[in-house]
Image (cartoon, rainbow, N blue to C red; front, side, top):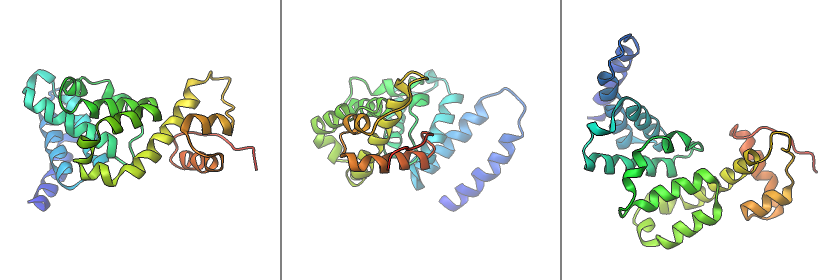
Length: 206
């Protein structure tokens, strides 16, 4: 009963926030339930946030190998498909995605790393070499156009932060070359990144 679950979680959140104890178990249980609720109703970004909070209060050795694998798969999927997720540093700082290594879902972990690096070439290679597995997830198939736009934005972010702090003047041609888009699309990508507060700056060309 998702309606009752929503009410129960809202009530529990009020109580949880009032705790002053350093005991982590109640927080672990709360965020585990929140993640399960968000997995059922979405959106992916909210599941991702709840899952990361759950991981911050839950030691890895408290989970079975099956639980680690399932959670790693769900977290990777939400990171990839979440429309508002552009920062992967937090999840990559946890050991959870390592539980996909040497499994049939390792490509998901590799895809998260490719997004984190803003590597369009690596992204395309992973998708192409795992086409059958990728195609088995309707969410990924339907979301591929948006995902391609996402990796372009992440490539732009990486261009900016790979530069020296005193060398942040980036030409349209540099951006077009790195992101594999036409020059006339560069301005739109920059404007989109600015609107999402992913980068700050100004455009000095007509």
